[in-house]
Amino acid sequence: MLTKEVARLRDKDVRQRRRAVRKLFEDGDPAAMPHFLPFLEDDDEWFVKRALIAIERWYDGKDPGIAESLASSGNNERRLLAARIASRTSSPEGVLRGLCKDDDAKIRLAAWSSLIRYDQKAAHEGLKNVDRAVRKLSASALIDSGKVDEEDIRAIASDSSSAVRRTLSKSVSDSRGEGLYPGLPKDLLEEVSGSVADASKEISISASSALERPWIQDLLRSRAPEVVTILTAGFRESSWMEDPDVVDSVLKIVSDPLLERILRRGRGAYVEAACMKGIMDENRSEATRSRLVLDRIGRSPSSDFIGMLDSIDTPSDGELAMAISALVVEAAGSDGRE
Image (cartoon, rainbow, N blue to C red; front, side, top):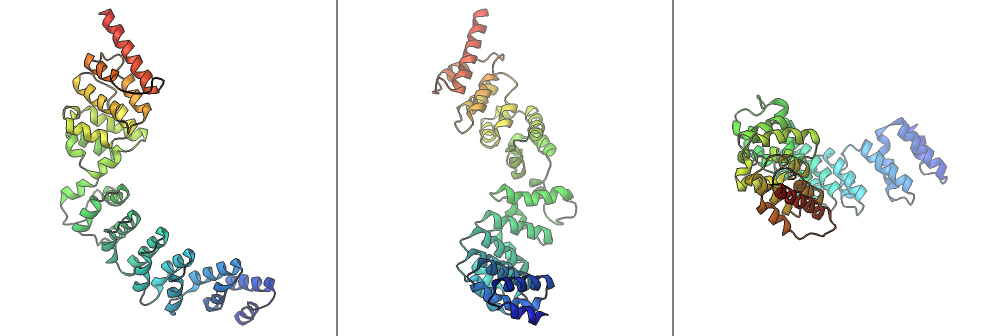
C-alpha cells in the first residue's frame, strides 16, 4: 500500500497527489516520511505544510542532515521545526545552540526547551539568559527535576522578573517547603513563599522587612479586589507611614487600588505626608491622585496640606483640579464654622 501511495505522490494530477498525502497520513507509517521531503521545495504551499507536518510527526533523527538543513533555513517556520526535532538526533547540541541565538524569540525558546531536555545542565545556563522566557523555562525545569541547588534558588529568588520568581514561590507554597529542598536555609525558602494572608501578616509585623521580599512585592502590585482587601488589613495594623523610606518604597511598588485603600483612613501628619507623595506622583493615574484628595474630605486636613494642594499645577478643568477645589471649599467651610 505504501508503494502505491508513494507512486501517486509523483502523479501529474494535483488531486491524485493530495489524495496520496491524505492516505499516507491516515495510514500513519513513519516509513513514508522521506517521500515527503521533496515537497519542501514545492511551489504549492499546501504540500510544503504537509511535508513539515510529516517531518515533525515521523522524523527519527537518523539523518541529522534533515534537522541541520531546516535549522539553516531562512524560513522561521522551518527553523522552529528544527528546534523541536533536533534533540531526536544523536548529537543535537550544535544545532540547538545555534538556534538558541536565533533572532526569533519563539525559536530561541523552543531551542532552549529541547536543549534542556537533552542536557539538564543547560538549565543552569538558562537562568543567566537575558530572555525572561528562557529563565522561566530553566527555573521550571530545574525545580521539576528536583536537582535545584542553593545557588539556583538564590538566582531564581532574586530574578528581576516576577514570572521567574513565581516558579519558585509556587513550588515552595504548594509543599510549604517540607522536604522539598532539604539542606537549604530556611530563611531562603521563606523569602519566596507565602500566601496573601502571610504577606499581610508580615507587613503588620514589619513593613520594611516585608517590602524586601520579592514574592510580597509581586502581591503588592496586584489590582485584584480580594488581594487588595487582605493586604490593606496588614498595612492598617502597621506603623509604615512613620518611616519616610518605607513610605517611598510602598508608593514605588503598590498598585493604584491598594494605594487608595491603605491611605483612605486616618488623619494627621504621617497620613497627610504619605497622601501628598501619592498626589504629587505623576506616574499615578489622575483618578487615583484625585481619590487621595477626596478621601481627605471630612478628616480635618491641616492648613499646610491645603497649602501644598493649592501649589499643584494641574489643568483647571481636570479631575485632579476639581478634587482639590472640593477639598479646599470643604476645609474653608470648616474653618468658617469654627
